[in-house]
Image (cartoon, rainbow, N blue to C red; front, side, top):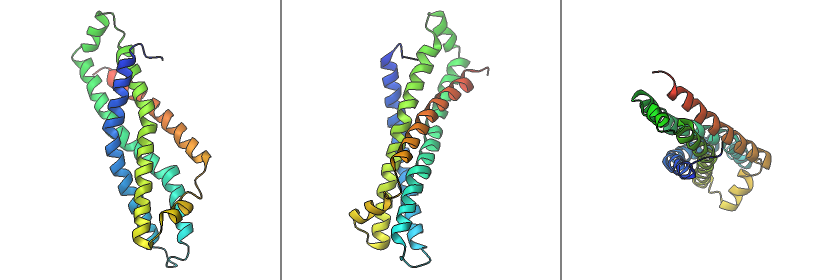
Length: 190
């Protein structure tokens, strides 16, 4: 599992993180802002439980919604491109050419992709959570005039270390699963 060509693994990591980060940041901004805005504006008791609504929004956004969104956007952006690239290499017999040169295709293609996706998925998830949380603050400020300190106190009240550990673990495992699934789908017969 250790990369034989660390340069390829670093290149894959940079490609996966940098290409997907703006995509997930934009998605996080939209979802975080809209979810908080509509939760606060549609409060049936006219702001009486604004702190509880912000606390619930923080828990749902950080622990569930934004990581799920980041995963979906990451797969849509990166797995499709990698599958097309590897599938084209199989179809045009470039993978066979690697074998003829004595290069194991999995070492040259799969391992860097696994490292790139396993490390990039938590990075991209963190980008989505941070951008979604900032949008949540802006929405709370627009809807209620909430200060940053008040927003932080309520928004983070329900989020604990177990939530962050679960997000990290699921993003690591998801990155591995996406890479392996992409490899097997792309390297199969055409």
